[in-house]
Length: 255
Image 1 (tube, helix red, strand yellow):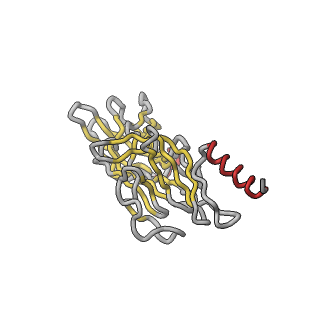
Image 2 (cartoon, rainbow, N blue to C red):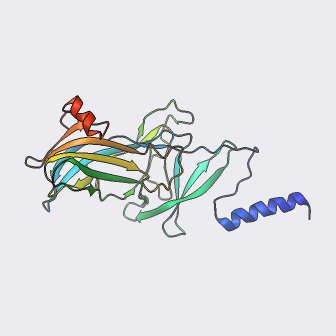
Image 3 (cartoon, helix red, strand yellow):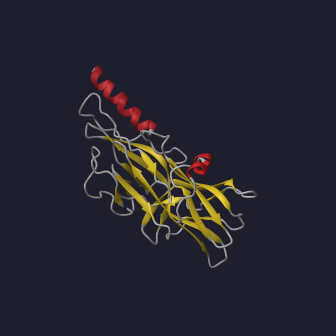
């Protein structure tokens, strides 16, 4: 057998049997992959509300954005139950698909939500008797909602992923995905917590399933003060959870 044919067949068989992704012939010998880079903004528009069942909720808006070299593109395999691939494009005009997790399909909305995209955590810092709480929201529809930096290479001027797709969702370079505080799941149950100071963190891709340029910049953290008696929240420091640094700077603004 011709050695070139044998080499091609061997490579094709490797991709076919390993299931790493879609095999595409590169246009160049060295094709650079364009990976996304997710970053979480600090939570904003914080408010304490009481649900119809009597639960006290800390509600807030969140925003994550893509500062990487390429888009975050997620593709649901509807023929494989709950399977989501991350498609990464490259400089040769091709792409590679990698397993990225699972999805939950919402038939009433005719689109899927990506599981375990972000985690919301509230930790006591100076609140005797307080305990850690996490948000219940675990599935997300990812799309371009706000442009953050359109000057980045490969950042589009218009939204590319403009809807919650039934099979494809994503976030373009330079764009963000925003969830308003009024939406379902944008809260942490604070029922029974004492008044005091807490650290509120937003962590994107907390299970590290998405391939990114930098895995160390996915989390934002802020200091807040809860007053459970009058159901208010005060932002002490929107940019850090360093309590000592906060005490040197003094009080923050009302949110």
